[in-house]
Length: 336
Ligand code: PEP
Ligand code: MN
Image (cartoon, rainbow, N blue to C red; front, side, top):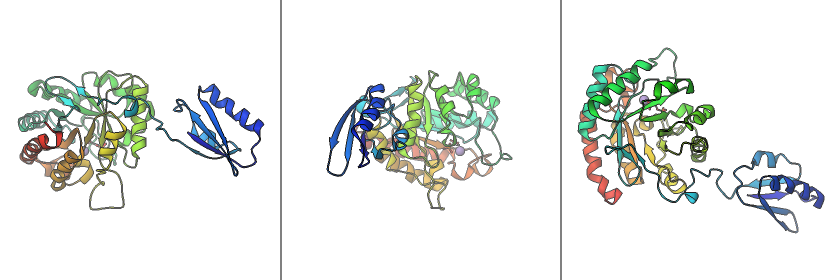
């Protein structure tokens, strides 16, 4: 971290200010120039609050030269993190994980049939929302606890591990038997929820917030990891831009950037990004080519009658065709 001090700063003020850093176990190097004095901090500065520094009357500017996240940072953990649930259900480590299923779990018949269909097409995980974060309180809110029970049933029928969204830490008891807990875009910065998920011993699929930066996503991952759970999967699902033809704009650049900055696996959600089923194949292929470790794709048996996100859902046949194409290209991009 580099701190530029205001021109008229006195030696006594610098000495007092430097004590704050000593208390944080950080060393200070000082350069006195013609116009201003610059302090360079050496050591672990993750605990230093840049807002606090900027609020000091002698400070002109402050800049981090090291990332504020540590556990999620590839610098301190060069090897890729691989999330392995056994039975070929793996995220990271050189293969492409396919997570597929409906936006919402709607009935036993629906989820069991879709689980069988996506498994036959080559999916490694079953997705399905039981607790749904809907913009309108009058829209379908999900089958809640019953939805989780139906997902468990579909898992018994197919062996596919289940991925489903949590919206409140108070629901954690219901998620004990869930394989991967999803944190939705709207909760990416629900820090109390993230801290609670840090105490859980299961993978967390953390979606990027609607208007969150890459660094904010990594800081949210850091919340979970700093609380003790290092099994975090990052998910790029599109961000809000001025474009109205797509539901969101898939940030392809986020994929190689996240892979460079962090050792955590990166999954891409082309369904919520594009918002239209016709865009899902192209976005999926782009994500694979850009280095994604997995895709989470919405699939519905009857998209026009889906209780949520029908427009962006593939039919099982469309998913099977896409999965076939992705599996053919997987060795090209994953170098197997
Ligand atoms: C979902 O996966 O169905 C969902 C609500 O996604 P997001 O949080 O990315 O909007
Ligand atoms: Mn959805």
